[in-house]
Image (cartoon, rainbow, N blue to C red; front, side):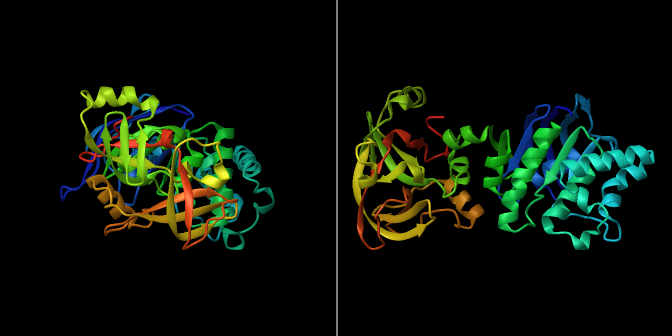
Amino acid sequence: MAEVELDHIWKRYPDGFEAVKDMELEIRDSEFMILVGPSGCGKSTALRMMAGLEDITEGELRIGGERVNDLEPRDRDIAMVFQNYALYPHMTVRENMGFALKLSKTPKEEMDRKVEEAAQILDLEQHLDRKPANLSGGQRQRVAMGRAIVRNPKLFLMDEPLSNLDAKLRVQMRTEVSRIQQRLGTTTVYVTHDQTEAMTLGDRVAVMRAGIVQQVASPRLLYEDPVNLFVAGFIGSPSMNFLPGHIDGDTVRLPMGDVPVPAHLRSRLQARLGDGAARDVIVGIRPEHFEDATVAGEAIKGLRFRAKVAVIESMGSELYVYFDLATDRAESQQLEELARDAQLEDLPTHGGSATTVVARLDAASKAEAGAEVELVLESEEIKLFDPKDGSSLTH
């Protein structure tokens, strides 16, 4: 187990492309750190530099306080779990798990003991004499993890290890990975593009885009207090709604009505904006901060308005209700970047003179597609962003 320090790390390729830019990150001893971001953001490159599979162009990488920039991968005392299982098909589970120990000439008694211990942790004891071809996808991934565990390394590096599994098995294996890491207490760096994995697995999460770390925080803090539009839009499913707004004194003017600036945000706004002059903003609203007014009753205080429902998605325990607002979409370079990265899949907005908003409502709601529904917005929960640079005005 060890601390990992990335001290102003850069990765430049011969053609000049910068995959990782000035990365500063401290990973604590025994911490489960997640690197998350869209494809091409540099997260896997950063992981490969930690493993020694990519050269570091600038900066220092320290593991356990030791500078390791020039150490070979085998000398770094790390173990890596890849997206593909990379198991030897002609070997049994026992032989696959113990192969690295065999190469290092570990005594057979010790090797058998370590393999048995890892198999017990991973619930693979009954499969030790089977070949990989006779195992399920989840069992093969556990074997790949077992091969890393038996080495008892300072650091686990995991590069999207669950992405080859089907959706249901992925959920199950998320729980397994978290349980195993907590039991072993080994410092772990886990790369994923799936923000659900990031939010459920990590002690802390580093959100990356275009080679730059945007924010490092606990999953809860990332969700509740994003530093900019990119983090706000990337974290959360369904994605945060972004609407054009205007601050005028202590009032935020929204397309569906006016709301007071939340009391807990006023001092932050004052510190950021100074004189309090009127200005345009982008307002971020999480889908769960809407509710059907008839279901909420008087329990939720906020802005009430009526909207015509376009589409309803029933999730059983809740409803996703989509409705259009007659307003131009919020404009910002970070929102355009987010749309490109997500290929618009997670963005509930589209072009034209209307903006689509998604609300997450209680299953008791009687909302119907094509009909109007009265909604209430918890105005205390809104987030405010600068349209120019995308930064949060209230972080």
